[in-house]
Image 1 (cartoon, one colour):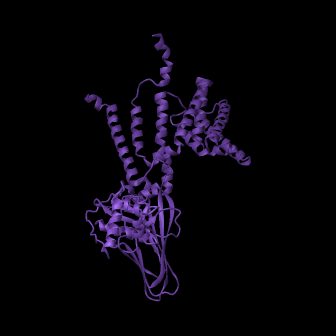
Image 2: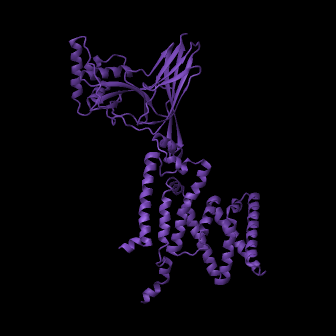
Image 3: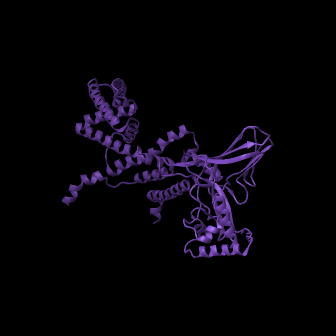
Length: 512
């Protein structure tokens, strides 16, 4: 048992297990903490929320205060900015308010507050607050008013589903109102008035509540007022309710600007003030946002990854990261299946060329170059040249063939010919030389077979490395290349029959 563990295969098996464990953990970490995805074009949604405050100055010193979103688990703040020409801007971190001050002004004023958010999540109702807020019970002007409130609560409690707050909201927002409810509500029912009436009824049952103002993030929002919702303290936590439907929970992508008694904004030294919100959506690559998320978590791991490199270096490494998978495929085809090719990794290089040229154009061009090269190599054989000059002559002929095909393709707008310049010249010349030697020593059939095998392996490798999903996964989760390395080494210890050899020796097994 000890010998098996200490053998090369045993050590490699342990290394493979450790490599898989490390790669799995790294993949999970990147998805959970950096926002990576298995989809190649998946980006991070960035929401830009603009708050536009406008007012007419009264000729006195101006002070504008705006409640701003708190940095919490609901979302992460990418950037925050204020456009207010001629104003001094300060941030009240304790109360989460942006303060803009200025000397008296004459003309209409426009102030813009912009915040960029990402990773929005609904955590309202999940964050507990054990400091139960104090509730001030309502005072009644008459016994009739008290009786009306009690009657409304009796009607609400007849409903089967929902919390106390949900039952009250549904009762007050029903299409057909009960007579008692209709009498309780005023003729003009704005969101603010409805919220105050609901809070009034909840306070009678000693249930704490507060108004929440924010913005529903949506591309359709343009110069719209703030959204108003109700937050109710239930079971040791704050729950948000839609005052129009009674639905519990914060809507998806809802940014809270202000909670409780503090106003959304205040303007001193101005009149006819108004605030409108606009929302713009954009998408940013997950790789770019990974650095932001790492800094948000105060992690320096990202600084030592390839995703922190400039874009040019990243694009180069994207192709290098797919190489190990192509190499593994070649090893499987040669050592396990037993397909002979011209050179060990020639198919890999040809496949990389096909990616640049395009599949059909590159394959036709490769066939033309090999065919013409073999013809010229046959003519050179009659001259009895030495090995190095002969190969050098083939290389030069390959270059000339590529030149002619490129010129021909440009003149007649044929992309097949112009694709020739992307093939590796030395490798192409070496394939021609190897094919010629095989032709002379083993015959035309074996030479043709090896060329076809090389092309077949190159085509299979091309379909693997050209796949957008595979290329993205191997770059985003490049730690799996360590697993591929151990697998290749494991395959190096395999000394059994190849699949082609099993077929070859099948008649012997039948005879036995």
